[in-house]
Image 1 (tube, helix red, strand yellow):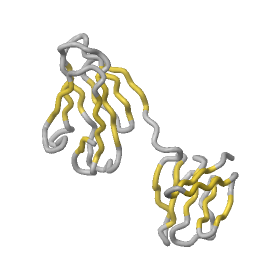
Image 2 (cartoon, helix red, strand yellow):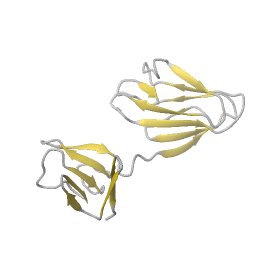
Image 3 (spheres, helix red, strand yellow):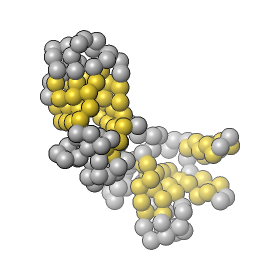
Image 4 (cartoon, one colour):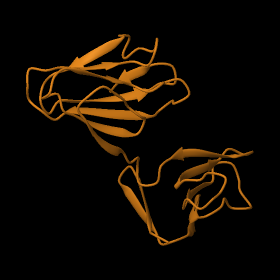
Length: 165
């Protein structure tokens, strides 16, 4: 098991493998602790069949909930140069050197907190149009455009529409 580092304000604690540090009870394991109290946190190593992926879990007093991906979120990097529908969790490297094209964002509904980053990789006069999914909007607009090399935008779902952050 790996070490876990926790930073709170300026205090930093490193936990070797699994440990209890009052008032925290944080462990890296393949299944939730059997004796838990509300607020307990554990780092799921990804072999827990209930979650299926590594990440932080918090006990609500009645159930375990996902509270984040271990080590922060990772992105799948894709390079595109023609019409494409993106997926949450991607960094889209957009090439517009061959002409204008459209990238459609996936549904925001049911994907609260998910993100996509889009970056223009080429410097030409062409434009990338980024559209919301169906009637969903991007900061209240049906679409936005990018046309400057090395500019990027981060899109985050609020569960209903998409925000630019």
